[in-house]
Structure formats: C-alpha cells, structure tokens
Length: 456
Image (cartoon, rainbow, N blue to C red; front, top):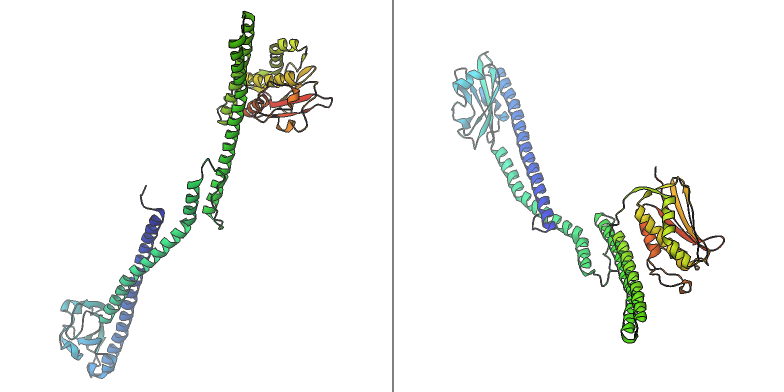
C-alpha cells in the first residue's frame, strides 16, 4: 500500500487523468488547426491557379496583367515552359525556376503540390501548386502559384505557446480543486476517526457523527454506529453476566467456607464431621453444576455450542428422564408421568435435548407441586415436548422473562436455583433451530414447552 494520504493519491490520479485529457485535447486542437490552415492554403492556391491559367489563355501580357490577383507579400506566381525555363514570374522570385525539370515533367499532365523550405524573396517555407495551362497562342505552359507558410507557422506557434502555458496552469488549478474536493469529501471521515478514538469500554455510548448528506460516507457512519450499538449491547450483556455469575458463585462459596469453619471449630465427633463434609459436598456439586451451566451459556454466545444431529425417539427420551428423577420424585412424594406416542421421532442432539428437558423437570420438582407430566406430540412437521405441574404456576409477569439468564421467581416458591436452568433450555433449543415457551395452565400449575424439528 502507498504511504501517501488518500487525498494526495486521489489528487495525483485526478491530475494524471487531467494531464492526459488536456494533452490529448491540446494535440487534437493543434493538429486540427494545422489541417484547417493547410486546407485553406490549398483552396487559395487552387483558386489562384485557376485565375492565372485563365489570365494566360485570355491575354498575352503574361502575369503583368494579373498583378491584382497576386499579393506580393504573401503569394507569388511563375510561368514555365515544358523545358522548365521561366516564361514569366512575379518580381520577388527574381527569375529563378521554382520547379526542377523532373517536377515539370510530372505536372505536365496533372496538377501537383510541392513544398519548399526557402525561395528567393519569400520568408520561410512555401507551398506550391503547379498545373498545366495554355497561353493565348495555344502553347503549353506550366502555371505555378505559391503562398508563404509564414502565417501558418506563426499561428501554430502561437497556439502551441498558449497550450504550453495554459495547459499546466489549467492542470494546476484542476489539481488544487481536486485536492480541495477530496479533502472536503474526507473531512467527515476524519471527524468520525477522531470521535472513534475516544470510544472506549468505559463510555461505550459514544457514537460517530453522521454527515447530513445521504452518501457513502454517511452510510458508513450509520453502519459503524449500528456496530457500536451491538458492541455496547454485547458489552452490557457481558457485564451483567459477570456480575450475576459472581453473585451466584459468591453465595455457595460463602456457605461452603462457613460450614467448613464451623466443622473445624465445633465438630466434636465423627457424625458431626460427616454431616459437615456431606453438606460441603452438596455445595461443591452445586458449584460444579453452576460452572457447567455458565460454560454452556458462554459457548452458546461464542457460537461454539456443538450439536450431534441424530434421530431421537421421544418416548424413550422422556422415559429415561423419568427414570433419572424417580428417586428424587419418591423422596418428594411426587409422581412423574410420560405421555408420548411411540412412533414420534425428533431430529436433534440426544444429550442436549435430554439436558434441556431435565432442567425443565428439575424446575417442576423444585418449585411446583403434584404430578409432573411430560407430554409430546407432532405438530406441522415439528415435535412439541411439554412439562407441566400442579403447583401455583409462575408469578405474574415472570413467564415473559423466564428464559433470561439468572431470572428467578418469587423466593417464596423455593430456593437453591441459580436462574440458569431455563436460560440453558432456550440456548439448547435455539441451537436446534426450535422455539420455547412458558406459561400457566388453564387448571393451574406451570407449563413449559419446547419445539424442535421432527425427523424425516
């Protein structure tokens, strides 16, 4: 990449393009003017040659009778015989033949143009037109008319001078205008750069200024501001996540430490030590589960929640979950019921779907009451799995945020949860391309459902 600033590079490219345009236009004008002057000179020579030929045929007085047809300062004429000898001539040629014998022989049958670098009595170069003619007595002659090219040369020289002076001046002015235009066009970019330099994590609300013009730069600014909005939202989620995770980890760690200190200070027999160790193990298990839950959420936000797609027999999946919770349900004097068609098959990751449903059932056993039902049905090419209980249901307004991270209901419903269970359910189902929902049943009790694709 070039180390030059963009405005300088744009100006150089613009100047090069302008130089090519001006050079091409100047060359075209120069050549066009030269061609027009040549055409005008040739036309004048043809006219004079015709006048001289007519004069020779009508009078025997030679060129003396047609001096008014020849401007001595710019034009001249000469009459030659077929041997190349001068028969008559205007005074400035001093009787010197302007054509060689070979040229006379060439124009004896048809007119021809010639150019001379110098002629006696003529300034600069000259252009000649020689044409066959007859005199009044019927003799064959060669009529030669000529014109000085001095005026043509002066006109072209003046034009070239003007182009050489005016061209660079025009190029300089155009380059300055191009630089000013590039600087003006890039000024909003520089303004956005200075503002972007002060955007930081300490104050992520800063946004880039947007020019009022609806152009590419303003669209770039809008895109960057949208990106900053997303980054601010992600940063806020990250801060909230860290704060909530710290809070959730602080409580079990504090309890764990307290129990160990109490056991160290006051436990006098083996039974008390065993109770303290058992309680500590429960807190450690809770910490491990919380760490695993946090890991699932973190991986999902980084796009790293891997899935292994397979055919999952829904009835078998729900039966396995009932078996895993059977001991806990028996302790709570609760009943687990599965109602799912045997032929119903979902498309998804068996272990992740089991994890999601276990979180839902765990919440139902922890916060609900009565029978916990696990139901499944096919609906429009999807599989809907639903878990319900007979408890008081969700508090007012909680169902709408039940799947948010660290969301917890009224503490009166129970304790011991981290508020990540349903958030992980939503994460897993979202990775499957499915949907989740929560609410209260018509007859009371909480109701949570997930919907995933059916296997084809």
